[in-house]
Length: 243
Image (tube, rainbow, N blue to C red; front, side, top):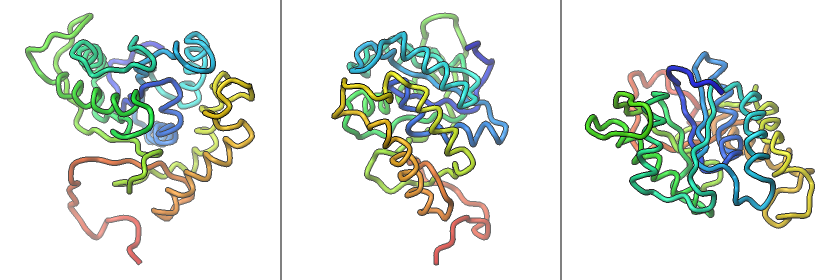
C-alpha cells in the first residue's frame, strides 16, 4: 500500500492477523469517524505452522482492504524470535517517524506467545526513541516524532480493561477481515490443537466481543488498557452508568 504522509492511528503487532483479532473493530470504528488508520506487522510469517510468508502477505493485503486502513506494511523481524534490540527499536522508530501517528496500539505486555509480549516492550521503547532528536534511524531521514498516546489491546489478557470501544456496527466486517487468512483459519490438519476450528471462529469471536460489550452496556466491544491516568473535564459527561 502507498504510504500516507501521516496516520492518526497505527496498530502494531507481531504477526499478520494479530491486529484483526485484537483491535480490527476499533480500526473500523475510528475510520468511520474520519481518522486515518494503519497497521505495522513486525514479522512476515515465515515460521508459522500454517501457510507461507507469501500466503500471509496476500491475506494481510486483503484484510487491510476490509479494515479500510490507509497503510499496511511489515518489517523483517524473525517470526518466532522478536527481540527488543537497539537495531529493532531503530527500525520501528524509522516507521514511526515516517508515518507520524498520534495514537499507537500495541499488544498487551503479558501473554503466552513471546513475540506478543516482546512486541509490547519493543513498541513502547521505539515510541520513546523515535522522539529523540539526535538518534539516527535507518532509511530516508525523517524528523523526530513521538506518539501522543500508547494503548494496549488486551483482548486475550486476563485483566480488567481501562476502557472498551463499541464495535457493534463493525462486528461482522471485523470477522471477515480475520477470515481473509484462509491459510490460518481454513479447515486443515496442520496445527489442529493450536487453531480455532473454522466452524467455531464466529461463535468465539462474537462471544468475546459480547462479553466486553456487556461491561459497558453495548452489544460488541474491544478492550484496551492504558498505563496513565485519564483526565476528565466534566464528570457530568462520563459514560456508562454506575447502577
